[in-house]
Image 1 (spheres, rainbow, N blue to C red):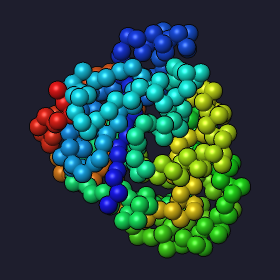
Image 2 (image 1 turned 30 degrees about the vertical axis):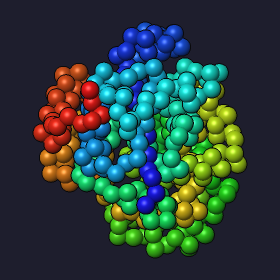
Image 3 (image 1 turned 120 degrees about the vertical axis):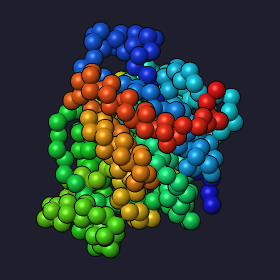
Image 4 (image 1 turned 90 degrees about the horizontal axis):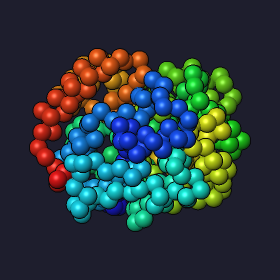
Length: 330
């Protein structure tokens, strides 16, 4: 089987130096609730690393991408982990950046990154044993599933879907993709997403794709090749130090693989996304290892009191399931 790296992006908004840079750029000393939820670290990153050691011991290497930040507990001398600073992968002209799309589009610049890598957000966790073939098939194709969705805009970020789709709808025929991949698009493994596939069938163009909150598998050479083919994706997005309506995202390259059929079909229920505001459901999933991968997504609709209740409960559940210190820790 091919060597597979894991890449994790992380930020700690409580870091005074990071906050100073952010406030200097925005000209404001106060974040919105949405921004707080986006940048907030609720202390569970070490459980992601513990889950990797326990449930994916086969991983070749783990890269943690940060902005001049290293978790105090991280054993950065451990041979299996490397901390990558933004300055190592993003041109100085675009730094500092607080735009996750800019960071994501430069992950392929990580030194010594393997051809096959899986991209994690810091709120994604392995929840039971996984194998390399859960992320790439034996031939090296990413494991994924193709399902359609509809854009429901409520902020700046949703414009990335439109920008990605504006390119893809001019490259691919939806009718042809459905004809060629009918058995993968309408498939029992897609579960509830089959309903959306049927519902969006009358629309002649792609209106969005299902983006499960789960680690995404990429082939570095394909991302590099497609980025050269569509240079505006990186050049336009890089100008934006904060998220902007002109952004593209790394998901473009996932979509490109899906539409060209360069993937191996995986069941949609491989992962599950929980909301921090519904923390009890996440706790049950951790206790029962119901899904192989879980995401616990922070939200701006949770007040400080319930935020503490939620994060305490989740940390307790993780400590029961993953209480043993990993080699990734000091």
